[in-house]
Image (cartoon, rainbow, N blue to C red; front, top):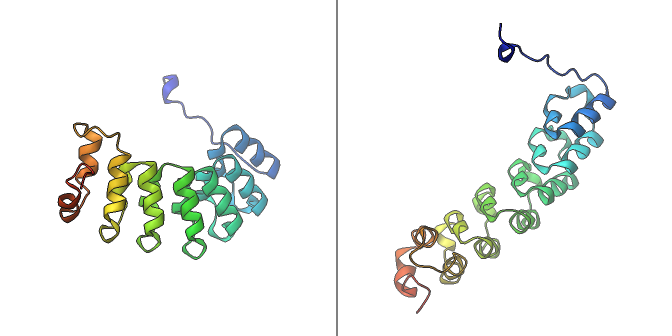
Length: 177
């Protein structure tokens, strides 16, 4: 039998101390910590290392504070925040502190004009995730402005494809009235 076909024995975690050591070694080892060893403190320890670990945290431990820590560390953790804990403030943190394309992970009803504007200012491509009814002249112009500005570029053409026809005609596509 070749060495490449030999499987490593699964890591056995039987104590909180072993769990902490495993998580320190690789934060994604959190996902193999037995449920009986999980505590709010251990969950917070892992989330402080990498916010995306929130997806592996049992829902009963996902508190407002833990979700805030997770989203500040890794904006995409917004997708793992329970709906009852999802706030505009948390959505804004996700968009500001992470790639604004995280707008895609935010429920439609939470996508406000302010949030969408912040997202397209950070990355014009985020216009793709702005609800059509919120694609105003202001938001579309900001998306174009933050596309790099070269009408021949792929990025610019991609953004312009998300602009509603009515607005495209109004701003003559290139941001000039």
